[in-house]
Length: 192
Ligand SMILES: [Zn+2]
Image 1 (cartoon, helix red, strand yellow):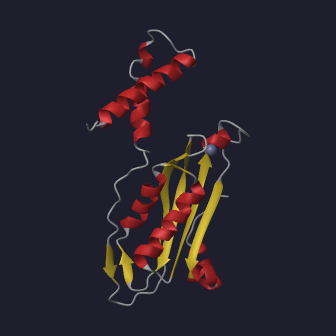
Image 2: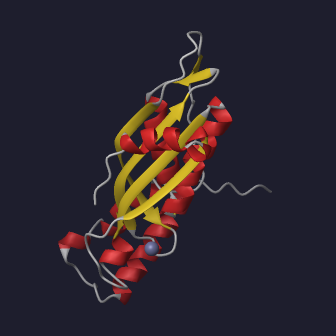
């Protein structure tokens, strides 16, 4: 016999778990503000589930032999820390120097969203984006810089709101040639 576990089943059992958490925190009774809180919370978490549809990374042949740096900067993102299940929020900067393939420009932002929208850590997102660029574009070089405030550091633990964590991943000429790296980093507007 095959037992089908539907999305509704999973969500229903998750709502019940959140009900228990609320009761454990002392939020019992009939306060109307909590009527649908478990559903809302699980709907929010649902967007961070592990099995997400991959997106189509559109590329175009580089028929003109373009070899200049392309950077999409200030891409806002939000994600959820795998260690604490608490959000981190910031901006990503993604660049590459084409070889045979040019990326559909929106796909750089899409890649940020795709890897950020899950329970993960900032270092992993940064690395996965750069690895995707290498795999799909085989560029002369590419780089990703991300900056974010981690609410697990702001609201708990060391409690330092306003801090920023910066991560970077560089490949190809961005890694090996100081001029290419400096050009990329000069296009990246970091908060200090
Ligand atoms: Zn954390």
